[in-house]
Image 1 (cartoon, rainbow, N blue to C red):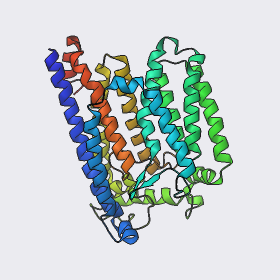
Image 2: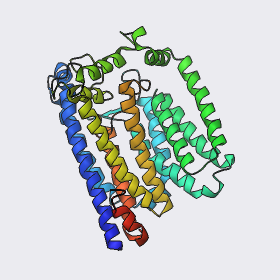
Image 3: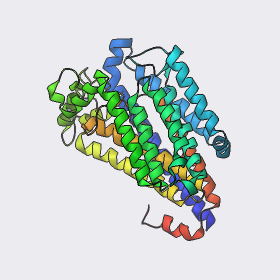
Length: 383
């Protein structure tokens, strides 16, 4: 029966990997479709972003294979050192990094951009989950949470200074969800939420461009040429797509109307090309992917590995919900790529590393899944 459990987990991982590969290849096609005119105008090479995304894909797969060989206990043991090393790199970036678009978020190396904050998805998630697991018996005490919130607060300050308020809010939200999952007191989480709302309100009120972003979200037509422009153009893409879309390659919004068409708003181009039918199909694919990942995470018996599995799943889930929510106008504009589809080297590589960590954590469960759980996972209820 244990071999059956192992076969089941291997089958689930195989399905997830193939699905992610298909999403990545589809994403590269959409990157080319949405960026070719912009790339030709800026670089005289219509396939410029497509070629770079392909290179990122190859690097991502190599990193995926290498990460499968990594000892998770080694990462867990040295999670604090890896996290603080990443924070030091972010601080160095603030000092020597080149400002692009008003922000210092990237190192420019050999013609490529490296975004160090992406690596927080690996090291902060491991650190946070390890911290919670070690203190699960005292998680209801507010004093237990203070060191974690200090680390999170320092990390958010470093990211906000770049400036990147959205990433800071993402990690605060992710941490709240993980603490809620491990049954921290709701009143303690509520206190942190209140403190976070006050901090965000201050950062929005005293920085005009953030305030304009909020007003543009609430009423984009009040300033259609500036703060509301991106959201309006995204809505036009949805409207033009209709039920069945205008057809692949026929998008009009990519013609210099929709900013960040190949990065943050690539889902809008997908909706225009393939319509509601194609958009819903992509959402179904994501749902099935999450369902498979949830089944694997739920079956895990090791506490740290189970936490890591759910933590990685939550990262993917929040990113997809936020990205699509922004393009639909449900959330204020936030520069967050659509996993495995949007253009972005650091993002794509880190997501393949996260996927490998997910497989790595679940692989150990082939030896520990209880025989009583096998019929549940093999039966039609979960698959």
